[in-house]
Length: 182
Image (cartoon, rainbow, N blue to C red; front, side):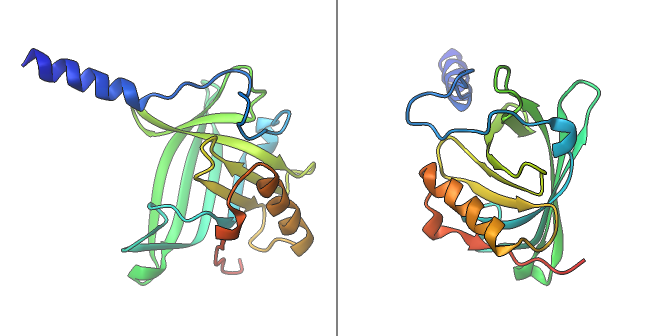
């Protein structure tokens, strides 16, 4: 019994990731700082690298939004929604808590959908007027291009993709996200 407990604790410990306060060599660069109050609100996904929870045998997310709301403790509530095109447009939703990584000027977030697991979401690109953002992980396996509106100007989209390419993301695998006009 004791061996199973030790193995379980080791397995849970392996789920935690080390997040340094300064970027490590070879890691994607983030923006210098994110003004959290300006970042709050609704974002519409414009493109993403395919990922199992949005693109799988039973799910293809369209009309994807991320809504960021402040919390009294300084963290941010996250509500992600989409319509599942493979299930007649059924609405899917997931909630999480995003916590800024100390020393990152809010450019790196640890997002937890359920304890003790989290994802590292780094803001890699950000329009000066907060009209669009490029968000990815240090592993470069996940990437989202977000916009404040359902449509993104082609020049802005190209700039966002160029940032992701510069940071080593597989932009050739990006898929555009279908967004209904609102």
